[in-house]
Structure formats: structure tokens, C-alpha cells
Image 1 (cartoon, one colour):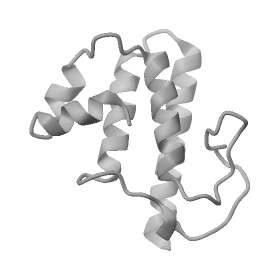
Image 2 (cartoon, helix red, strand yellow; image 1 turned 90 degrees about the vertical axis):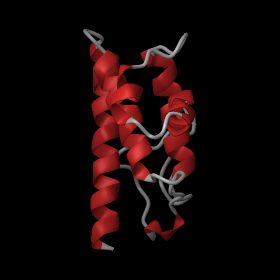
Image 3 (cartoon, one colour; image 1 turned 30 degrees about the horizontal axis):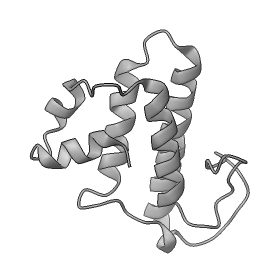
Image 4 (spheres, helix red, strand yellow; image 1 turned 120 degrees about the vertical axis):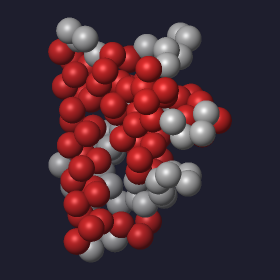
Length: 117
């Protein structure tokens, strides 16, 4: 999982401080890669993945959400925290903004599906 998750837990789960913190050497591109891989690990095996192992948003696959691995004590909040940190640092990089919003929409769809399952 991305290093900012560890930092968040070590700093009393303070969202505001975590969002303001600049992690040395962590670029939006690196977070994109780490977060996408982590999101893939969290998701059940039945979700479609691309050649790089990333979840295919809107891809094929059906199954129960019981297989989702809820990450740590704060569950999906840590995923949303990472997406927010990423979003705040994208700037004018349209490609990264598109990837960030695509992941956010997938997380939202998963949470909605889980709520109605």
C-alpha cells in the first residue's frame, strides 16, 4: 500500500495533516502506480484486470463482495484518503486527473454495490 497510509496511521489518523504532508519523492505518477496495484489487491479475484494487473473499470466479472479485502482499521477511508491526496496534487496533468477520477468512480461504484448486496 502507498506510504501515505502508513504515515496516516502513525500520525493518529489525522486526515488534514496527511493531506497537507509532502511525502519526499512521492509523485502523482508513483502514487497512481502504487494505488492502482493496491486497489487491485484489495478487490476480489473475479474482477477483470488488464495486462499490468490493474482493475478494468466497468470490466467483466460478477461475484460477491465478500471477497474484498478491507484495508486496515479504517477500511475504504484509507483508499479515499489516497485518492484525495492524489487529486490535490495533480495540477494541470490531464492524464493523471483522468486516472484519478476514474479510480474514484470505481471506488464509488464498489461502495454502492457493497451497500446494496
